[in-house]
Image (tube, rainbow, N blue to C red; front, top):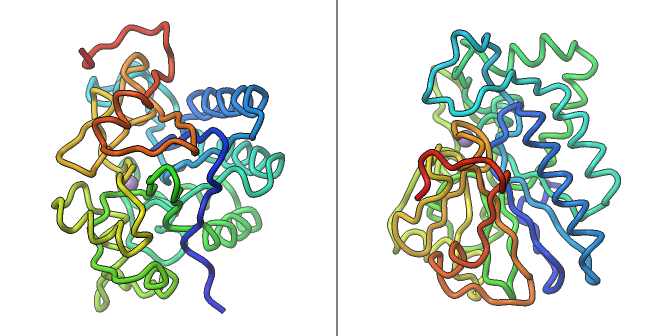
Length: 284
Ligand SMILES: [Mn+2]
């Protein structure tokens, strides 16, 4: 029985969406704090979607930190995963982590080598055999897409570039078909875990396949130094953490009972600074 790769969110409640933590524990704690506050403040409850790449980040001294990585941090993916699991356990079914290409590297995807030649190998070595096995089993269950019909929102790791005709096509995607010499990564996975952008027509076809009511795709994967970008409708790319300065980091907050008509409208009304008192460096 394949794992369900597409999760439908309820039509009511507050939705928070964050992207690409890459082992940044301080930013994860800030997201968790914002989510707990939303749970406490929302009569109909709150949901959190993190669109993948919770793990794998730089472990370099501040003195060697390059400007292009934004505000300094020392990645600690093991601690972040422990806290992510606790948060999800405290709010069953309400905290959803989507698979990113960095998690995919632990469960059959291509090797990722951002800061280490083999990022998954580096994290496995830190975790040890027992915990890395448990993490692999957990990642293997993570969905690829979360969507909210009434709000019109579709969340995923990268741009929605995969050519699918129905939501169940995603359930058939094989995580473990990749082999460095013979097999390319599954074409559907390549089209949602690695794509940085796509055309309006491809994105709309993807949304239509998931659910005809969907109007905007929300994702991360790429670094947007200003915090977010809209290449074209219906694409909203958000940077909550990795590669940004604190004052430029943003997350999305949206009432699930309210329909988002476009990426522009969603960005204008739903984006919030992760650190409201920090000074933006790139965002106007
Ligand atoms: Mn990514």
